Amino acid sequence: MRRVQREFEAINEHLTSRREPLSDRVVENMLTGYACVDALLAAGVDVFAMGNLKNLLELNTIILCGTDPARREQYARHIQASERRFYEERAGGIQDVVEWYARHQNESAWHRAAGAYVRMLSKPQLFMEGNHRTGALLMSYILMGAGHPPFVLSPQNAAAYFDPSTVIKNTEKKSAAMLFRSPGITRRLARLLLDHADRRYLLA
Image 1: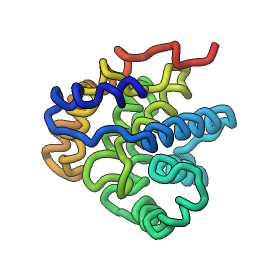
Image 2: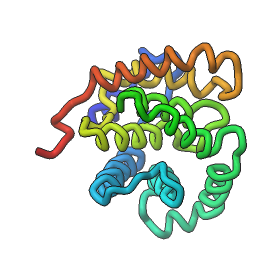
Image 3: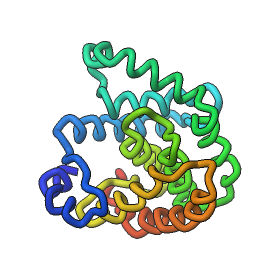
Image 4: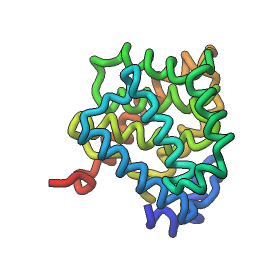
């Protein structure tokens, strides 16, 4: 991730839609998020089970605010609004992601991770902010739960990750475009996850 941060200007030149560079805070919060994913898996927590969905909210809060109580207090209203959206958005709240995931339990972990990301990122997005980064953590949770390496952004996979993500976030969940694009994008993203799986990111 530090390499991505250092090389982001060069990466941006190859993207269909330019993105903001990664700040130190963004990188630090992502690393904290990965630590949270590790803890959830070690504890055997099923984040898709009713009663455990709050853990997905926590991942998003970590992405945006880290774990500093003062910073969380500063963004308390935003966190509360994001929670309402998460549970109450009828067209694209957490129920949509959970139901999609339940329907695809027999698919490979690569496909489930990619598909859950697509459902999270497409409009209306699951969270008010931080959907890309929280989605990367969710994909890592699904992959690691199946014994695969997490998804980690690198200079080699950045363009292949960001460009389809831009298409996804501009596509309505309940649209003909989504029906047409979703299978292909999901397969493309699943292939990306598989091709860039690096077992060095797993402890022996």
